Amino acid sequence: MTALVVWISVIVVLVGFYILTYRKSGKESVQASCDISKEDQLKYQALLSSIGEGIVVTDRYGLIELINHKAEEMVGWKNEEVVGRRWCDVALLVDEKGDQIPREKRATQKVLSTGQAVFNDTYFYVRRDGTKFPVGTTAAPIVENGKTIGVIAVFRDITHEKEVDRAKSEFVSLASHQLRTPLSAVKWFSELLIDGDAGQLTTNQSEFVGNIHKSNERLIEMVNSLLNITRIESGRIIVDPKPTNLADLVNQVLEDLQEKIREKKLTMVVSVHGQLPQVALDARMINHVYLILLSNSIKYSPEGSQITVIISKNDKEVVSQVSDAGCGIPQSDQSRIFEKFFRATNAVRTVTEGTGLGLYLAKVIVESSGGKIWFTSKENGGTTFWFTLPLTGMAPKAGEVTLNS
Amino acid sequence: MTDNKLKVLVVEDEQLLLEAIVKKLELSGIVALPFSSGKQAVRYLHEHPLDLPNVIWLDYYLKDMDGLEFMGAIKGDEQLNKVPVVVVSNSASSERVSRMLALGAKQYLLKAEYRLDEIIDIIKGQLASGTL
Image (cartoon, each protein chain N blue to C red):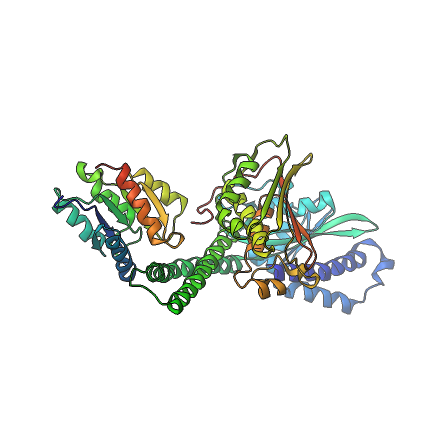
């Protein structure tokens, strides 16, 4: 989708240039018409009609000045039929259910009221014949002397992009489910061997089977993470916020990690704001964020060190902090740390287990909950992660799937 | 029951998984009744009203039916209805889990998340709190 935004932005700039010159030459003054040659005019007109995206230009009141050939084709109206009418009335915008999107929420209107460019790819245009198609629109203001004098909206039919997105999600989810059967078989049979259910193993044998089991657990974890990412990215995840006590939630996560904490003789310090209210959160999702941050801290901390969790709040949000004295993230890796499958160079060296998916997932969850996540870190000097959640809670969302299912 | 051993009917259509489950159950002193077909398992249950298992270990996705159909097929029988069902599946959408629990399944577990002996402990827990 990023490429689409860039491409559309380029078109907006090109067309904006054309519009300004067209208006000058055609409308405003005889003097100005000398600014642009007939040849240039023809060139820009050819550019406009040859562009594969629909283009609509409105004046400062949202009335159509022109639509290009592709736009005519896409919505089923001729330029001469729509000039002077409102774009909002010509091309109705609806959501998935077919409910009409009010004018003030539409890209062209938003541009007129804010003067800022807007990108939108969540709705559908209704064609003249009543059929609809998913549309990606970039609308930008036409600015002259600091004033918005109109809007250019460039749009395209994104049926194919949506289809590819859906197919990609379905593939990952199907592949992951199919992978789980052989993974379970490897898991259970290696456990039978480790437990001595097929007879006593030699030291070497149990070491080797142990390695098989451990590697398989990593694969299981990776499949689970991939599935979770697909669930969130596909937008099919159910967000079910309920009043949640964050202190209880963190303690539950620590309880689940107890064995690893004990193994490394770590000291856990948890401090929670005295007047922290309950916040409407999807506990399963936020639990996952703490689990990812705390597991990382435990994994990369030296034995006997301390991990601190602080949950505080300000006027608008709950701020959670997880600090460790671990190996830290090298400066050169910091900009990539939230990327999918990326693991810091020192992390790969010191701890082989890891999928590179945890922090990406944490970021996706926090941001889809209306919060932010960031960190400070120094190589060999520990890491602190913070994330915020709005005190007003997460917005509920209907869907089909939940995390870890 | 013909002897005092606990009996678990296992429905799992992946032959290798079925083998592992049966092996572990037997090593835990439990009699396993393995089925790789849902229909055959249902038939067995209806044909042996006096020799019902103590627990049913059910995979959700079977080649010949799914968990919902399986529950539907045993629902009509009063005695059969009392046998606790533990679903052990590859995937667990919340809708599916709640439908299975509503139909009377006692627990819904994700296969790859559990060690075999953990599932067997859960099964034993069902036996302890169960109908015996």
